[in-house]
Length: 136
Image 1 (cartoon, helix red, strand yellow):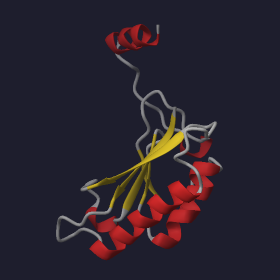
Image 2 (spheres, one colour):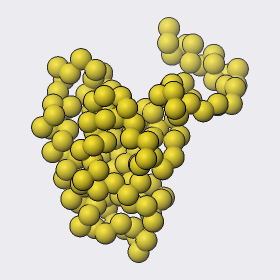
Image 3 (cartoon, one colour):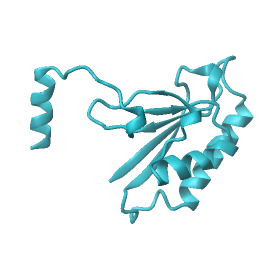
Image 4 (cartoon, rainbow, N blue to C red):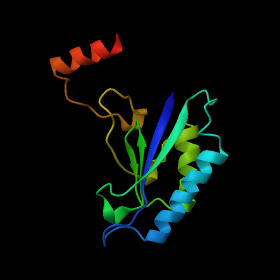
């Protein structure tokens, strides 16, 4: 089971992107934390934490950007110093770090921690039927 998937834009590909050195340092810190805290262990009762380095999340001026799925919480200006606090608070203790959140884009059927609840449009009937088939 997967508890979270962390996407980090850490590859500077455009002039507006974060400093490449900061992006790579932050990526290395994310890898270290996931490994050292045992978040990638198949034995973890909450499920494993996946991490992916991505090229572009289209928020270039605020990078590195960390997106936490399934909640869809986006952290901006993530540095090595901020990464451990985010992992320990949000991933391990299920407490997003409010002051560093840039935006939220949750999956339609996922519930956010109470401070980040948003209303979502009603699902079309076809989508509901498809979801029911997939669940059975």
